[in-house]
Image 1 (cartoon, rainbow, N blue to C red):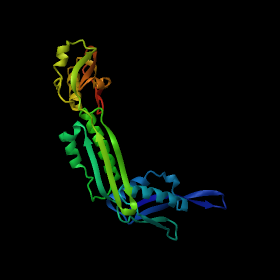
Image 2: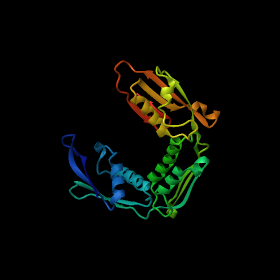
Image 3: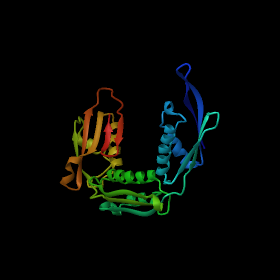
Image 4: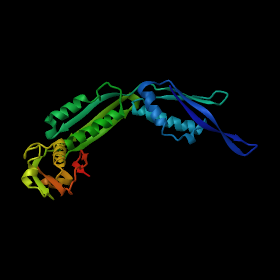
Amino acid sequence: MIRKAIPIIASLIVFSQSAYANVSLKVKGIDGALEDNVSAYLSSIPEEDYSTSLRFQARLDQSITEALNALGYYHAKISYSIPKDNDELIVNVNPGEPVRIKVMDVVISGEAKEDEEFIRLLAKSPLKVGRVLNQGEYDTLKSSIRNLALQRGYFNGDYTLSRLEVIPELNQANVRLHYESGIRYHFGSVEITGSQIWEDRVASLRPFKIGQPYLVSEVGEYNQNLSNTDWFSSVFVEPDLTKLDDGRDLPIKVSLAPAAKNQIETGIGYSTDTGVVAH
């Protein structure tokens, strides 16, 4: 049950001004994840907009309906009651029967099809036939596939189909995600600029071998290794995405700036799309 204090304007005709009284908002009939999501949606409504008016009730209808739809409930019935003393707005919610997943049409093609990390990702997804639809879980799986592709060097990957089909009258939903990964790129030559240190010493700190399948974590590790030497005031390691058409081996750019005297720290930030950003 959601209970929230809200202000309501009471018109004072004699004095031609408004006064504020505390009115509580109580939502009944839902609990658990449904209650949490409805509460989250209602929290986005500014308190100065609250009232017991029909207009405000219509606004609550929209927010509550959207919150329930996101968790697979498309047949909610919402009613309101206001006690005689006008100090409480009671919202009664019957969520109805949920929409369940009828079809799971998730296909990974290209070289990622045989990648164990993609197989593991799909197996761990909570989206399953027969499960109550959760649109957040669909969005999470969709973004996770794309992010994993970038982390593992499938830089040409893209969706050929991404669609969530909801059929409320049948209480059914179809999940359709077709991802074509293309090839997986490998680490190519390391191109170093701005170093005052012998390049073989810089190259010796890389955790990967030329020709090894790309992993963004190893780009980050290389950046960290270079930063830890205190040789440089800035370090920027990234794959050269302008060379995607030049073959499977993707050059790695290492941009360095010499450390000032007594420089002892370099901060870094990671980008899961292109590598590691130093700042």
